[in-house]
Length: 433
Image (tube, rainbow, N blue to C red; front, side, top):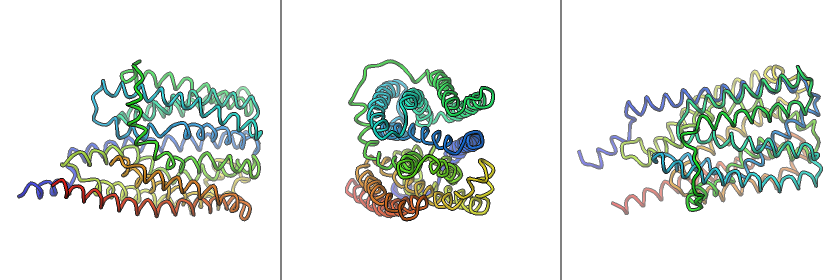
């Protein structure tokens, strides 16, 4: 058998060792969405029943603003870490982690200042809530950094432990502040911040072997920016749905509308369980398939993970269609059931985002992210351009229609771009031979 045939034969199947490792990784990753949605539903059930609709809207807006600032300030550094930290020795990893961490914290503070001025000018939040937002962002940035490192380094057991303790501490702190101390909205926020402080201390302990003081090296950060920054517009896909839309709804309507959207999206997020499982190890396996002749190849690895995603996502779609109203009643009150239709539309949006994420990761693996960045930047521009019109015409469902139109266009364009990328890679391999 020729060398080329031998390599092609190896590329058509996964070794038993690789299969076993993949199954183990997916099994650990499957525990993350279980924790995530148990936590999210429990938190929504506590606060939507305890707080008034308007106060719950304020809570939802505050949490979405934390996510908004974190996404704008992230520069997609942790996304790039999924690729760049793979396969490096411990010493190199420590140097890169230090420089990336310093950059991440610095950007959080800078972006917060800009947002604080805007929120104050538009009277979205009062000064006390803006101050709490800064404190929450410091600890959330640390925990986002630690969680991302666990994923990038495939320290999945530590990642699961970290997330489990974080979720339990936040729930415990809010239950105590709301029911034992009767602290209201501010009590819930204080409990949230205290829990995040404790979790940040845990993160330092779990990752102490990878954290060290070093010399800041912008040359290292540039490599991460070269991969992550062009894909920042795609990071806005989750940002739009989970963080930006609540802010827009507050500006278009009010806090009650934010509360109804929040419950709809909480239930719709169930459709992202397959994404949370698959994406936790997808980029690393895709990268290894590109680097190793003995792997199944990038194309085959993509379709394998895509099949796993569909096998989990389609049954969940059916379940939410049939039982969505019951789930809404379970985690909130009858008053929120009218958000059922919006929830179904957001499920479609979440599935589009999930597939788009899998396709976009292909560009990161080949370190050619610029074209993908342009596409998702265009999607963001389209959404912002049509969201106001759609909201005026159809109210909250109009936001979902704008999301579906925008992401549908993005999904079409990114699919065509992946096809072109694969053709380009094949031509380059022919030339190399």
